[in-house]
Amino acid sequence: TPAYAAPDLTNCDREPIHIPGAIQPHGLLLALDHERRVVMGSRNTAWLLGRPVADLIGLDVRDVLGAGPAATVAKAVANGDLSAPLRARLASNEGQLGTAEVELVVHRSGSRTVVEVEPVWGPEATQAVSYRSARASVTRLTETSTTPELCQQLAHEIRQVTGFDRVMVYRFDEAWNGEVVAEDRREDLNPFLGLHYPSTDIPAQARRLYTVNWTRLIADILYEPVPLEPVLDPETGAPLDLSHSVLRSVSPIHVEYLSNMGVSASMSVSMVKQGKLWGLVACHHYSGPHRVPFDARSAAEFLGQTASQLIDDRERADNHADEIRASAMLGRLTATLAGDRRPVYDTLMSDPRLLELVDATGAALWVDGQLSTMGTVPSEHVMHRIVREIGEGDGRATASNHLAALAPELAEASDVAAGALHVGNGPDRWMLWLRPEVEQTVDWGGDPTNKALALAEGPNVRLSPRKSFEKWQQVVRGQSTPWRPWELDVVENLRHHVAGELVRRTHEHTALAE
Ligand code: BLA
Image (cartoon, rainbow, N blue to C red; front, top):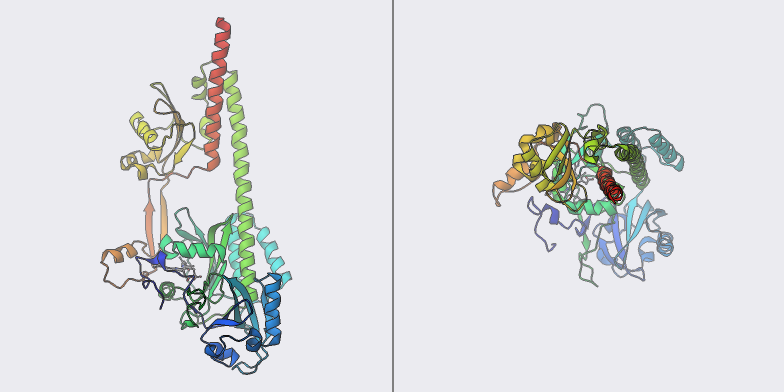
């Protein structure tokens, strides 16, 4: 038994899911030492190899898998290319499958070489994968013109290649809550598109693991985990790290979650953008076990990564285009400041481009006790309060799109100032740009607070993931559209130009006086 408490809702994110000490039964696992002798194995080896794991410990992998597969493993280790699956035919005819054709998936875990053996499954409801079909899929992904379309196409391609009943693209927000942003499903299923799920559904350690290991399959959620024997590595006394295993037994809490959702088999593929988990392609099956051949899993992973890269490229290009537009506008605005004979601040506060620059509905300038405003702004008192909350006062821009979260009394001003962008130098000199609240209706896939309710019931109650996934609506108030990072840069640049213009005029003035 593992040396940690059984997982429940209070310690969800502490369950060490990378060391479950067991695998799923649709394959078997052997851990080898440097001489390629078996040191640990899963307790289901008799199924394919004809002998219980206890009889295999200490044997050369050659005597366990046969010369052909052993040579394949040796080659993989020598090449350092441990990610590709290797087709092999087991030489022994002792197992139930006789001379079964298998796939060997080899990787390193600490000082061990881990060999996972999966029988090659017969043709299922999946399309054969080839370089040509993968390339055609990629072409179709690149032909889409928006991120939502791209995600939709990705869901479609992955469903084709894996044969799941439902394939969703699940996108994380900044707080790690998620939303189903695209979906391809069997006609008769109810849609999940647009539903949101709370961050706790995919806890932090799972997200960390999914950032480095991009695919996981639960072929049959009714499976009995197969323990490793011995469960601790005899050399280190530690459990075998299964982070990169393809057969890793998954968290029982998650299995319960899936069964509450009516799912019978599940797979997910990570979408990683610039090293950060952007989302998951989540796949469900409802009609029993669903085994997906390694090739199809790899193709799905490849498509997920390609799509992530395309999304990243496009978002950067879009952001860049907006940024270029804003800096051109800033150039024209500052040229006007330099060419106008009126005091700099007067010119600035009468130029409508000041709002357009960062897509604000109001702006305010406070210099030595003088307030000037443009567009729609809250009371002077409220603006000073905002500056106290978000103003850094060191010349760097700061922003919030949810002021009410910083100071509850600011909620009253949400209709004109739910979000603010600030740049300035302490309480006596600042500028603010303001945006109103945009009310949002969020459709949750089940009441996200009912886990909190379960917790509130007390520590002795059996805790489990929520049972109901009925749509639950929440209206989100008090937030503006978020400020983009380049918008902060733009106002810092503006501040810089204004300061420069003030200095220039002072010098001219001094020069004239001399
Ligand atoms: C893992 N949770 C996951 C995974 C998904 C979700 C996709 C990845 C594993 C997989 O591929 O199945 C969540 N699945 C969803 C969501 C949808 C979906 C949101 O289809 C929406 C349509 N989960 C809980 C609670 C806990 C929890 C309360 O709800 C903890 C107490 C844990 N979820 C949990 C854990 C994992 C997980 C531990 C990791 C499973 C593993 O890889 O071992």
